Length: 146
Image (cartoon, rainbow, N blue to C red; front, side, top):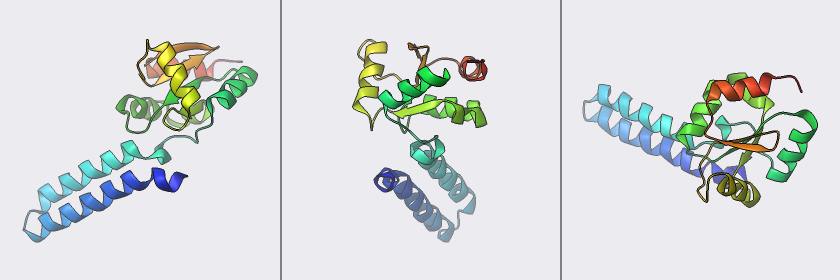
């Protein structure tokens, strides 16, 4: 399943590399580096590999009830989700992540919390949703004792 999810990031890397190669061959190495970096950033934003392994919404809620850790509902390509992931650093692995594009139950939970919109990241703490919370707040929720 991950193979299909890597198609867009792979195409972005290959397309950026091809475009940058053409620019270098035309004598523009400086702009070629910038173009390649832009394509690499876009590929990273759309890659599921940047995020911890996703579980289903039901499993994430079950695990959260047992260990008290937050559930993060996210989707690939979301810059706010990427910002949260990067700001959490290693602590991100301590939360339970649900990709709403792969889990219809998770998507429904987000729509319920955000008045019908699929606004992510949405973080569940103690079963209560928090839409696009501050990463520092999420870090405190992950670090708090259960």
